Image (cartoon, rainbow, N blue to C red; front, side, top):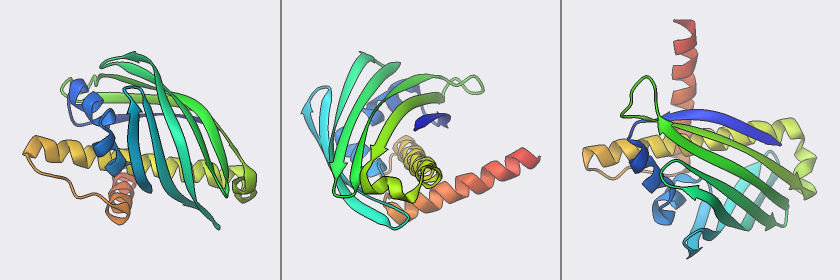
Length: 179
């Protein structure tokens, strides 16, 4: 499964880089994340709960960062397993000043992920849709975190509030297209 996309974050590149490299804060942004621990400066282990269609499970895995060039780029190597299947893959994350507003950051991401086991029974289309929704929830949570930081507050995070933020962003994007 190939994943690519772009997202504009309402903060400077350094702030976005720090957010995406802080395991404590990052764990609050990842949908279903139960635990995220740093093993080394470029290696993490974690547990997430993910439900896709009728297949729900707990997955444990490792994340290794490579090709690190702060605050512009890194490559992620991911390996996760659970009773409902496995996931292996890699991805890149690139940060650059947004052209419309240089105080904002354009996040470009791309990756290739292999999924197997009972999880594949739900079908590739459902998995693709679920991946897009989880990425949307992640970026909605990241945006809320960055805006709260700018205001000197702590963002409220959680599955339902981040899902609601994601849905509001989808609705807003539909109206922007029609204008």
